[in-house]
Length: 84
Image 1 (cartoon, rainbow, N blue to C red):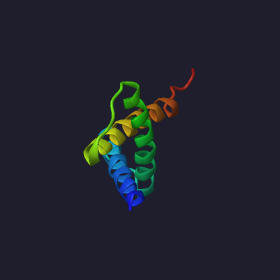
Image 2 (image 1 turned 45 degrees about the horizontal axis):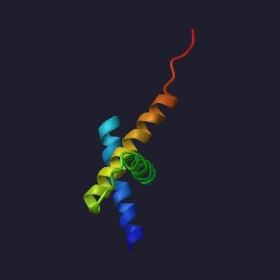
Image 3 (image 1 turned 90 degrees about the horizontal axis):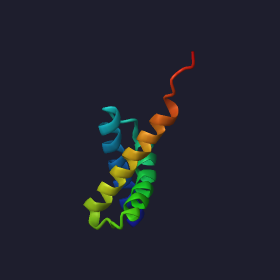
Image 4 (image 1 turned 90 degrees about the vertical axis):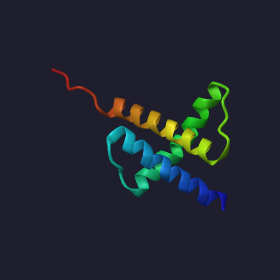
């Protein structure tokens, strides 16, 4: 049952992060992947500051923070200026 809950939190986090960064969602599968990886990234980032997410809202906030960072890094890598 917890596996399904993690998937739902990841899906919601990916959708929220895509909405905040891009202005719209990117589809069910992409939002799910971004949210799940974002949860790992967010947990790692918060642990660097000595913070721990507690409860469902804490897990969602952590995943959203990580997903935003993940999307920001992906944007930096993929959008390079062309050389002249």
